[in-house]
Image 1 (tube, rainbow, N blue to C red):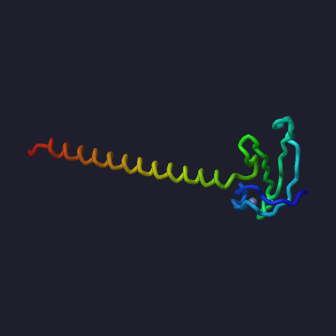
Image 2: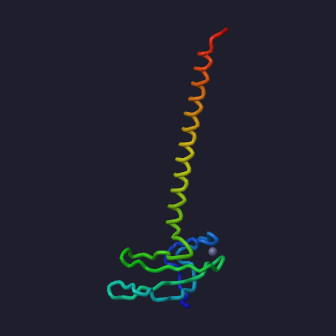
Image 3: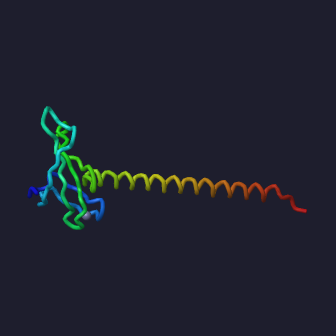
Length: 122
Ligand SMILES: [Zn+2]
């Protein structure tokens, strides 16, 4: 076990605990079999969520000079992006439903008006 600080903000997938960059955790380091970068071995780091102890794995992405979450959690920025996308999608869907309901309502009014106009008094 390597006592280190998190190199990025991570949200646990199990309990949605947000762990900030710099949080103290104990890493377990493993080779990522078959992955090297410029001849250097890539390592995967496992650690446990500070709240629920679920296992989370991250590894470096040397081409982009950052870490990526492999399992058990998501990058907090990625989580925020997904929430924003969900909110926008929900807002768009809600707007479409309202628009559709409004069109359907107007169509019903038009049909009712036509029917009342086509009825001739006896
Ligand atoms: Zn957790």
